Length: 342
Image (cartoon, rainbow, N blue to C red):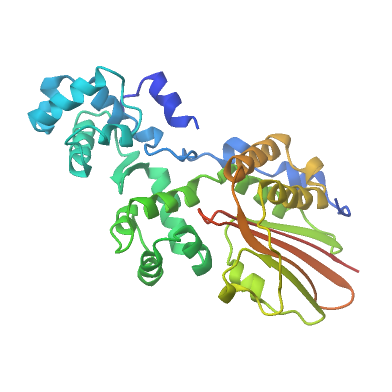
């Protein structure tokens, strides 16, 4: 596969509780950041995966005569005239050229593939974004497993599309997902983002969940979960719930209503507390923690979150505290649960 320029590649990528009785061995077995992120996923909100950057390289560097093999001459003229002022850095940028719409972008992709600017690692352009083979794997896995409540939060403006995905799955390709009725450019991009943008945070959560408990204290952290079932569950001995930002029909029975939404600082504090609760600041390798929190900050900065804070007891000798946060626009969600038992 031909590699794009270094400049193009850079533009693609820019973008306290009680302790536990644990053993160091349990943590040294945690995969490194590199191992956790072995697949090359699109981890920033760009519209071209790095494995697909050859599409832009083809549009930026192929001669007029070569482009003319795949596109009408008037389209080629517009592309060549525009790239003379500045190279194309995204599909949206390329698509802003007069006469370059979705069909022309697919023709450009076809030329790039024929001339080995891209290979099988690039699945191609689907609903306005170019995805990699690893992106496709993550997208399919997410759509086949995501819970109803989370999927509707990820697709707030595509209710019918979410229902159709739930009724049609399992899928085997991203193309099948993109072709589902009710799924368009915005919703497909939201799905891609949900599937790929939080992998460093998910690695941190996996490390937290891997820390063993002695039966007295513990923590669970989740990136993907069914918040409605968790928030609406009843508990025998104590069941205190405070929720915020939910539609009236979604407020769990008996929950108090907090007027203010959560912000990035509140979400980060909940995650930090869960990590500290199981001595994760010592037991989890620093690179995993650093990458995870940096990823969390990038995904939450300036955002607002709905959710619930739940304290419940199933008996007088234990207590669980749950924090649920869901981005009111993107559906990005985080859950932490800490518990103790006598």
